[in-house]
Length: 261
Image 1 (tube, rainbow, N blue to C red):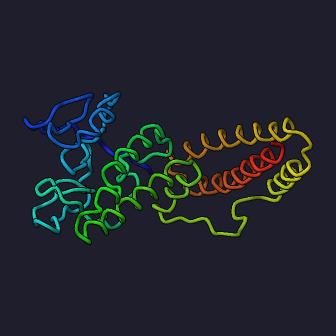
Image 2: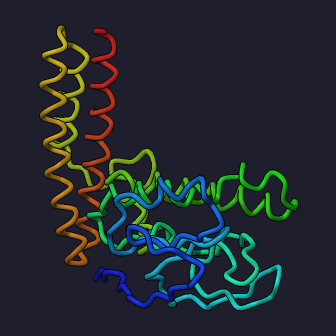
Image 3: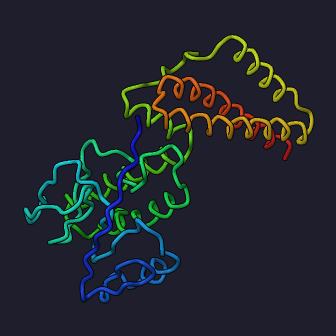
């Protein structure tokens, strides 16, 4: 059964930082980012900002803490992007889930707007351009952390990849190139829809198929969410198989519409 990641509430305010829009922003550092970071951030679970540092308010302590590779001090947070003591970027935490990396609740109904904000905030600090004048190890860690955040964001952004990833975390996988979980009637219906897309003569015909497909995807999203909440992993897997096919049709419709432009 799926459990939501709990949120803790403690925060240490430092005298050298300003509390702006729910964020701790250093007075004498990252000045070029202060305005962008300070606007509209009065939401729970936002990031703390210190010089060369990003850390979560509500990080989980389920994974053992490690020491900074540079100063050897114990890292306060999991995952740790920067050391709180020496402000040095850290290597990616091995085996950390994308939900923890992106500070998301472990649920299928992810807040994608919050996810996007987190992605932009992390990349603002982790991007390799910020480390072009640093040591080779720091440049390496920056590239690794930035790439990891990219993968986590892209995986959690779309319902299909998010659902497949959640199954993967539970030890279940969809086999590539198989019709596992799809009955013959369903596959026949898919064939008819694909033929209808191919034979569409006007943008209106293609768009009608697109609307029907988006409606089906929305319905499947609700069913998958319900199945995962109940811990019915095999049911969720079968529904994700259907979602995979309908997502392919949605892309095909987009391609058909581009032909009319």
